[in-house]
Image: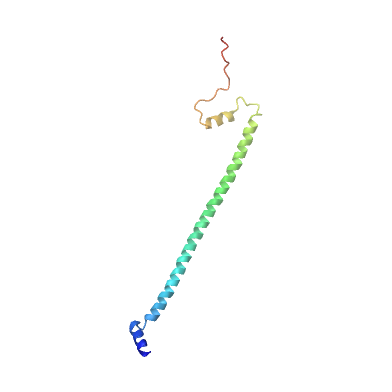
Length: 113
């Protein structure tokens, strides 16, 4: 047994055991720090994404309200007294990108033959 202890003392210097324990401890601490950094990164990304989604949801709600208002306005246009010369209809047609404004007065077909 004594020779075994002599061999171990010769192979492992006096601070070797303490160094091995410190190395294992620092490895564990390193792994814990890495895991914490990863979790913090994911939390930051989640918070940013959550804020973006809330902003987009608000924009979508606002757009739905505007579309509803537009649909109601278009539905009321048919009952408008000024339907023939409605300035709103003219503006909507211009926004569609029509190159030629459509004529409101129809031409009568030729009654030739």
